[in-house]
Image (tube, rainbow, N blue to C red; front, side, top):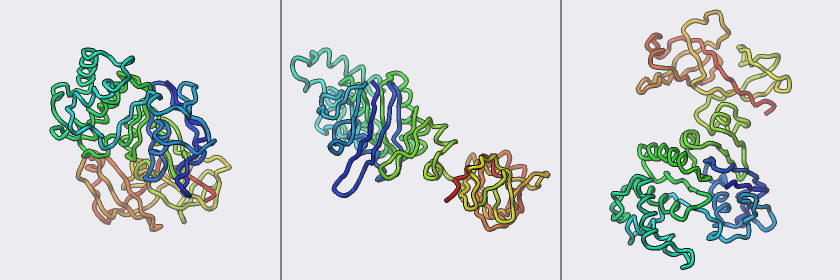
Length: 354
């Protein structure tokens, strides 16, 4: 089932949480709403679910081209998974998953054997069938979240909505569960929207990322598109670490003080006052210029613990930069604090006229 959001605005008193937001979620896709706290992502998710109402007359919410703005939450066929599980503490895992089926009107309620069969299949699907008789207090955080997901799937939703589903878990469990969620979605193909502030989570799990800021959408695209081709300075900053500095852009070059580097440039990007961005893994360093344009710098600090070596640099123009190189490359360079190096940024992004 596709979801289409048209010009949705939401105020809480004088605070505008969403400003004319429009978005299309294709059928069967897993879409991440990504942004900092207060960006409007959870408000948008709750409006899609019917747990919040948009401002009167502000726009439409369409499920498969049918407007559901005035449709009650219980009739929207939505499964909702909360950050803190929201499980019934006095019920076992089995009873929690079965709850939504047991409270259906009698005419639409499956038989007891059908409910039992469906619940066990769901518990198998989320890989906790052996824990069916345990209470939430007897389960780990990751297991409780799997129960919550199975409960949301039990009512056979057309749309699955997840609000920071792994936010309450530790880093190791969170990483395991997001890989598992991706595999589960590939098996079920339920149209899904999840809220997160974790950039790695959004980029790893989703088909499409919606980057939000201050109640508006900054960019929509695949993980590759939003990471490698950010349309705004906010997206560039928010999606991972970035080196940022001022420069001048003209005639196919970026100028940093007295230094110049070539840059593939559209004429409309020329600016005397530009913000230049490059990610650490795109900062190439060498101990020689090799006849190529480069910025001279010295090594300030080396962080070599881990698979990637992070090197903090200071250019002759007093610009601080961070470079990330492989352990293999680092082993050939004999870098130490105060070593002189030559820096060549690759894949520069310029936001000019600022």
